[in-house]
Image: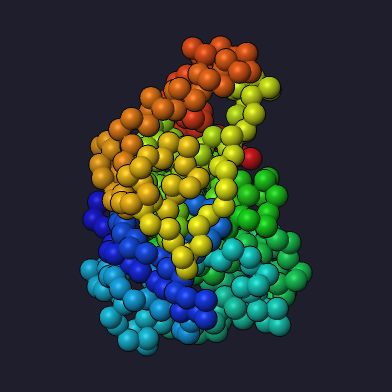
Length: 368
């Protein structure tokens, strides 16, 4: 399918008194029509800033997009004026923000907030916009929508507020929805419901979706492709199946091995990533992950690895990407000896169970 979005060498910096924060530093990726892309990484790695850059919502000052192209429907939206951008933002590209209580206006009813978008972008009358708003609330699973649309955000639960945000995002039939940590403040049951709803609606409407998250379960279940971000860069990218089955960057391996597994003995411990992310104002030379990497070599201290092929449709920014599978086996075998597990059964290269992406027929709520 053709690409609906192409991001090329995007660089978004924040100019502060302490120095220049390179929040997004040379990010490139593509998104096909109707595809779901997962953007994964720790807090502060640049996930949300990259999404805000696509929406051109970077606060200036201190932030500024200093380089790059963002091709949306074959047009570089970094070069259009703000009036044209406002027509795209909300109309063709919509965003579901992390915390709906801070995104919804507390002094306006839900009706006002939904209908305003419809009147502005779709040219509807107030009566038409209200009917469409009620229909949208019904679509996202809000009961008694004709009554609830008159209420204020504080009268909704957290899950219901997020459903309102999804309804607003879908209201103008966008081509692309960016969901920035859409389930962070919700319990796991509601998380599953919201994610199932988003996936079903984007499939129904043929909308491309970018899910920004640190939850690897979300990525395994809902994403077609995955970009792993660290220190403002994409350090690994590929299909969800390939990333889970054959990770080719130590940071990805660390993320996967820090997730609890039900198929391992209870005495097996989680393997956290040691240390802290680097200071984006004073990035170390060479690989940004070197100081936290158990497999770093001398070259990592001087040279910056570029994204190179590590399999079909799989890219990794690691000098040891080809040998990483064997290195993982050695670690798992050592843990098996240490904790008394069966080394043969535990020495497979997958650091986490890949069943989550092995079947196309997962049942709702498995990620919860």
